[in-house]
Length: 164
Image (cartoon, rainbow, N blue to C red; front, side, top):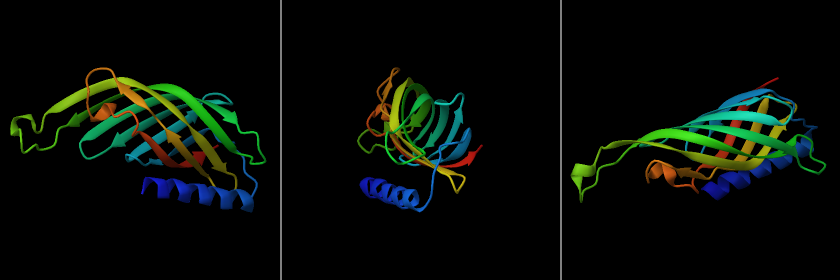
């Protein structure tokens, strides 16, 4: 399902690129992000530097991530398509699910703090006030091992409403 979603987004981007001229001219964007689900807010603080806050929600996890992103043009004929990279931090909490083999460890709440990185592509559709990004966000939990530290599973696809 994850591969299908990414392929579908790339096809939509390709169709949109051929249909219109695009530009990455926005200052603020707010929207939804998948894998896991969450709310994302991105604010450009200069031409190519942005900060992004993401509040993730999953069955047993709530996690807030703050990222500093450096955006760069991709040398191609696609205007408005940029790639980005940057560092970040996260804080979150999770609750263990019911364990039949050890019910005493079920329902325990724990807090985690860690560091993140992000790399991805960002595409702003000129004719519409929307931004699409696809990224990978590896992370390491510094306080304890948990679901929060499953470093290869964060990231995903974001759909945002943009404000100039």
